[in-house]
Image: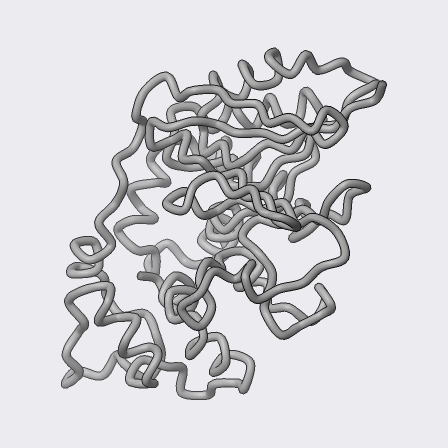
Length: 275
């Protein structure tokens, strides 16, 4: 029997990824493995995780971490944030170029036989993937203060990752596989043919869960419209989201789509503004 496995966010946890493949009993030429994106950053060995993806032929989608890398490497170094500079020190330039040149070819979604695979989720109110904002597909969690999947109907199961704080989700029509491996929890996968979930416990905590409020205290505002000398920078992440939602922080030339996203999910706008 040909089998399929969908694996959650890896974030450089190469040992756990390798163990998951072994635990599943992957048979080359027979089985197919998909993955929810965010192979890189946070964990101990993202380069080896990338090599495993290529060696096994895992079919992944682009995560927000891959997208941030692509955009960062298209930006002059003088404009990099301290967070970006720190992350970039993890590998050599040639290694980052290899990763960038690989992940830029990953799609934002895959319509597979058993499920629609996407990194974060779908944009409520839209019925065509082509009409959905890439930034929403890459980073949505809540929409109008409710989980996005409570506001979406799709014609097949949606498999997603990205939401480690929410953890494993298994409700009719939606399966969330980011169970926080890099935070010392577990890597989770789903095999539809067996109607079975596979779990590999993290070997250890590789990165602490971040306090977004503390992190935001030092974050410069990257959004046009809130970078004048007399503006008062927000001090907490809740304040950032509140100011984004009410329009104090917004692009000077904002499209109607950007305005809708900003109001419905300030955290999406905050992420892509650099917070």
